[in-house]
Image (cartoon, rainbow, N blue to C red; front, side):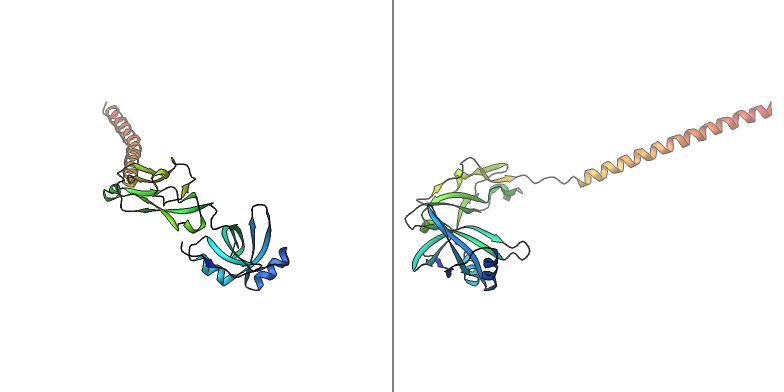
Amino acid sequence: MSKFEKLNVDIRKEQGTSAARRTRLQNKVPAVVYHSGVEATPLSVDKISLNKALRTGQMIFEVNVEDKDQFVLVKEIQYHPVTDEIIHIDFQKVKEDEKISLEVAVRSSGEAQGVKLGGLLVQMLNSVTIKCKPAEIPEFLEIDVTDMEMNTNLFVKDITLPEDIEMLTADDIAVVSVQEPKEEKEEVVVEAESEEADEASDADEQPAEEEAQEESSKEAIDDAGDEG
């Protein structure tokens, strides 16, 4: 990451629900920035500036608080349950030379051999936790699936890590797998239902045939009696 996107922020002098509502009416988003051992500072962030910055995919931003340039990490974003608009955001202050832990996305690269043979590539882990300096935070990490055969897995330990980045997620957690496609059982079910229907039909016909035979036998006995 060569540089950090800048965010326009102001210190909020008022706090509470009503104050936060007034902040949103000004087209700003209530926020706080905190650092270990330091009291959180309430902020307001320009809504347009924030949405533009978040679209870059970056997690570290540069802000100016009390005439001091600072770097902050996005820790939590709260969204409105109906409109999905951002209603609050938490930042954590970071230093350029201080390693921090955070989650980054994992993406697969290449085409698996098993997929070429008809298999399905299933991603079971979408992000991992790493530790690195702010300037070294990658947009995402890659895991190469090219050599994967049918019914095989790749794990966290197989993710390609850039230099100076430490993996915090356990190495033995599966990330992707190539699985055989499930066979369609619809035809089998239809055939089974057809067989059951035939058996039921035969079962219904049997009593009818037996009754017909009994009636025929009675008529033959009666005829014989009349003739006698």
